Amino acid sequence: MDKAFIAKRTQEKLIATEAAIDLALIETTQLLADLLQARSDLGAPVAFADDVQVKLTETVAALSSARTAMGLVHSGLEEAALRLGIRHRLGGPYRKKDFELFLSGDERHVA
Image (cartoon, helix red, strand yellow):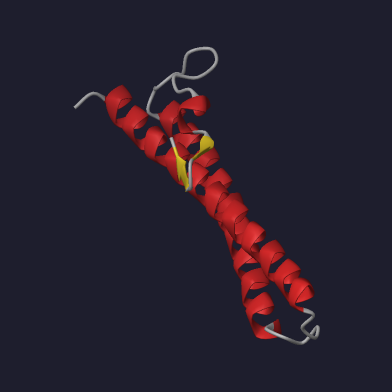
């Protein structure tokens, strides 16, 4: 199998994974905002569902760390590709817009 084909397949999965983490981060922060708004709308005390808020905040932090780690993976794989003699065309061989986040009706997913 051609090195460039393998590298392209790997980078496509990497970009899709990065986009999925971004989407999860967006969804989690929106859920946290909705939880805080719901508590306010219900007139519930500040301590109401506090344990849930803490868990969601921890989830946001974990997803943020995962996104940072995936950025490091991306850089590492670019260096590995260069060591294998795989050169990218100007602008890169992959279009990030192919993996953009978008909303479609009630579904949120990665293209």
